[in-house]
Length: 273
Image 1 (cartoon, rainbow, N blue to C red):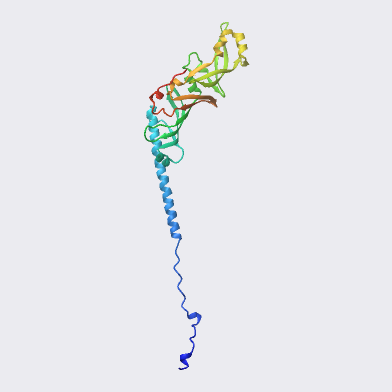
Image 2: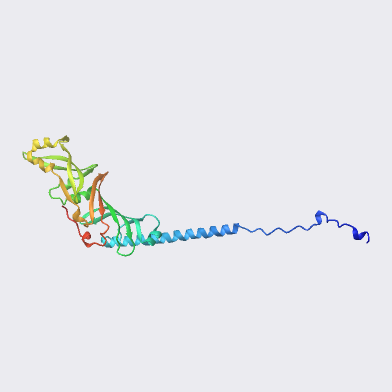
């Protein structure tokens, strides 16, 4: 055997060993960008669909209100649906629907009206679980309402929270003596009841007893309660629950029976007890 046959094999120098090629690195960021783009488009599509659904619902409500109340075509009606519209439409009812309009006339009386209805069905018979309403009258509108009450001096009416004010002349020995009266409003049996709270004679406050001492039974004209029937102007399903003077407005609160949309009896005008 030759010397060359027995010579150990020498390892190659480090620089001459071929380097292993690195495994290709998977890029993650394009997937993240793609997901973000899809998410943005989905959100944009949702908001676009939500806006369209809201516009349709509010438009239908406005048309129905104008038709049902015989309001002018240009009557401004504000409609607000609380929360996202699409899930509520899918569920079959609107949770809270608020409708507001100024200078709405009903039964010869004009006022600003706000109604908030709850659980309003969007298909089927149109029932709701109930509603609340407020009607606000300014001084002029209140005068128009009180002019329907026999003997009430409606042209002297004013508003001075928390009372309604008016003046009435009492005759003493042929002389008309004006008496100023502050009346506290309350609600009872479908009526606004105006009860004397304070009296003025010649610019000075007087008691009911002092007025009776001076005018006798004539004082009863001033010291009486005045009942204003509100129920006769509204459907029987709309019940007066409270009334107060708030700033320069008389504000009346009502509860609305949820069956009013389907029960003809509740749609007829009410009566006062």
